[in-house]
Each structure stands twice: as structure tokens, then as C-alpha cells.
Length: 287
Image (cartoon, rainbow, N blue to C red; front, side, top):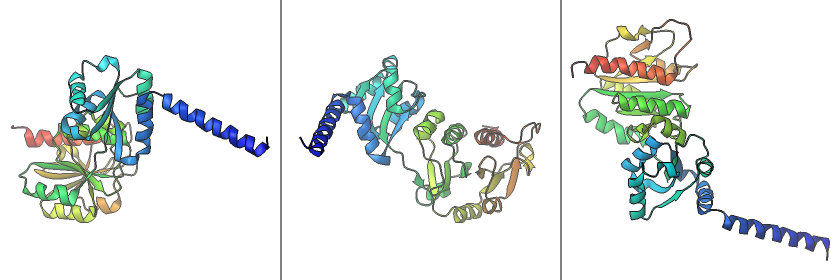
């Protein structure tokens, strides 16, 4: 046989064997590969609280569930719902779930769901916000890129009744599975929005009576000396770089968190929690 023909036959045999191996792989593994091929429209969410809230808040977005045996009793209602709605679910081993979710931090469950899209701040949030009586608190993120920080900030925001977290279009970190897990379910409760024109929007909020409060690790009014107004936007900058100069110039007041000075600054999510906690204390003390 001609060497070229032999090579082609060998290649064909190899491709056939690979195709057979693919067909013989477990269903959940083949589905995982198809999900990866589907692009950014779908996302894997994992973690007990994140998955519970995802199912409760937007059940129509659930596509498929992967779960280990130890979590079956805890999620029996979800699995009954899946059976009723003809949604696929797979009981897998811990090792298989680690492969599906691509993390060791899955907590025994992973849901493949439609991606939660960020809202448009100008179209979806601002009109309602201006009709709502105070108190009203917003978080504007400038340069916060770590998804774990986003998840932690969302958890804090849900606890302190923040109306919305927003940032410039394309500047917010994606609401990844890791961010959703760290948020402990808050990602499904706190609105996340993008602004087409963040500087103009912040000026509009300022004109509407919102106090724009910048945060700084080294320069500003000590937090516990500041009196919060019922309508505020906390401007949260990146760790290290802080707020962009054009954002900082818009602030009515720059706030700093007093401490020992033993370290340069707090983690951005921790600093946000301290700020929101003090604001809540002032505005809700008599509730």
C-alpha cells in the first residue's frame, strides 16, 4: 500500500476511535462539552446558596443540574421541579462534579443556566430610582475587577439594602460562577447594571440630590465624623489605584476609614462593608 494511503487510513481509524470514545463517555460529560461550545450565553453556577437562589429567582433560566448524592435531600424540591419541567439532572461523584464545574469549591451542586445579563442603568434602573422615595443607596464600582470581590460586595449590598451596583459599560467584572458562590445568593437579589455614560450619569444623580461619596485609603473625612444623607452613591475604586481622577473630582466628599495605620488599606469589599454599616446605623437607628 502506498505510504500516503496508509497514513490516511490510519488517520481515519484514529478519528473513528475518538468518535466512539466520545459517544461512550457519560451523558453529563458530553453535555458539558456541548455547553462549553455554546459560548457565553450559558454559565455554570455552583455553591449551595447560589444555586438555591438561582432556582428561586429565575427558574426559567435553569438548563441542567449536577449534584452529588450527599446534597439530594437538601435539594429534593429542586429535583422534583426538574422532573416536572423535564429539565435534566445528573447525580455525579465529587470528582465528576469538579470536572463539570471546573472548580473544587462547588459545594456539591452545579447548575448550568442562562447567563444573568447586566441591566442598563439609564433605561432599567434610573427611572424607577427617581420615583422611589429615600433612603436610597447605590454603589458605583470603578476598576474593581476581581470576581471574588464583586461577590463579596454583592453579599454586603444585599445585607444593607443597596438599590443597585453599577459601573461603566464593559468595566464591571463578569458575574461568574465564582462571584455568585461568594455572594451566597445575593447575586440573584442585588441588581447589577452598566452605564453607557458613567460621568454624565453620576452628574445626573448629583443633580437629583444624591451625595457622591468617594472612598480613599489615605485622604478624606474620617467615616465616623460624616453625616450621611438619605440618598447616596458610594464610589468604590480599585485596590491600590483607587478612583480615577475624573470620578474623584465628582465626589461631594471623600471618606476614609480610620484605623491603626498598620496596613495601607482594607480589602475593597471589607471597606465597602464598613462604609455601608455606618450609613445603615445612621439612617436606620430609629427603625
